[in-house]
Every structure is written in C-alpha cells, then in structure tokens.
Image 1 (cartoon, rainbow, N blue to C red):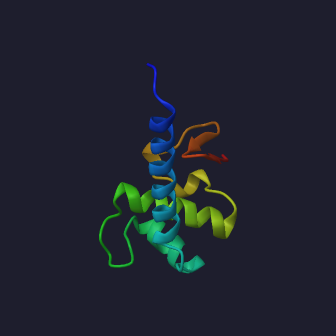
Image 2: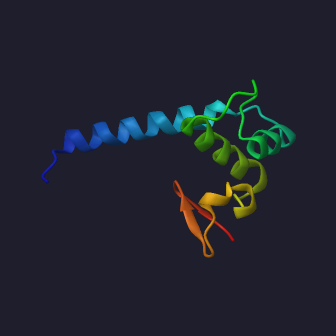
Length: 92
C-alpha cells in the first residue's frame, strides 16, 4: 500500500491526539484510586471500564508505579512471558 506523506502525518496527528486524551483521563488519580479502579475494573463512578479507560488507567499506573505487572491484568490476559501493552512492556 502506498500512502502519501500527508496521510502519514494525518495518522500520526490522530495517534498523538488520542495519546493526549489517554494521558489526561486519569491525570489526577491517586495511587490508591488507580489500584482500586484496576482491581475492580471500574472507573471512579463505579461503572465498568471502557477500553479507552482501561488504556488510560494502564498509562497512569505506569506513571505512578513504573510498570504494569501481570497480577494487575485480568487472568485471561496473563501470559507466561513478557508481553506488550500499547508501547509498554509488561514484566512478568
């Protein structure tokens, strides 16, 4: 597939706009709140996390704790070796 430079820039722009939204979503969440929301898989209002919120919570966890550990991932997502979450490596 041959994409133009403007298409590539547009895709990058869209990617970084999403990243800003992801990083902003739980920007003010405390360590306690992040752990509680992840453990319960709910947002601050007690509603189930959307995929967007799950991504944002993983990013906030990495900001606060340095990495996402497999024990914080739902059992169905665990694997015996390291895996990738977005651009982050998850340590086992």
